[in-house]
Length: 148
Image (cartoon, rainbow, N blue to C red; front, side, top):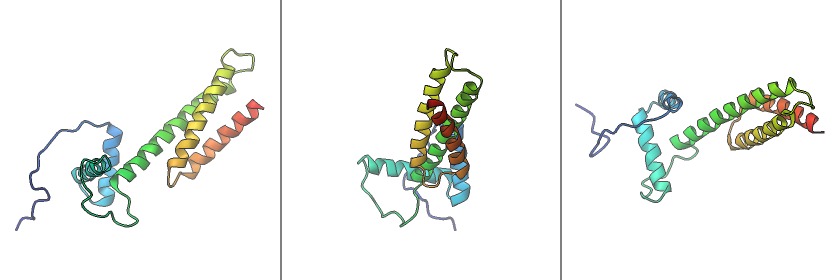
């Protein structure tokens, strides 16, 4: 006997997404045992509820993370990785410059801005990786020494 349908009037629609988001959805699907379609439906439903287009049907599971929360955490982590990669690139340029170099202080300022964004991003993560915090701390220490 087939299972009852999950949806009353389903329609298939194409959705275009970035490859990294699709990979996150695949990993989340494997981890939770839910299909990617179900995860996307839950995320869309939560968005529509949050924006006031739908009424809340059921209470969320106590202590559980919604798919939107999981995706936001992963997205913030990806953005943090990118900020740290950018900071390391600017840091390596600064090391090869002298204070007499025309772009030295521009690079210091750029690095400072990237580090501020990265520290703000870390505050948004529930469980920031220790290695990223260590890398960020080392580069921040370097900038503080150069600014003095």
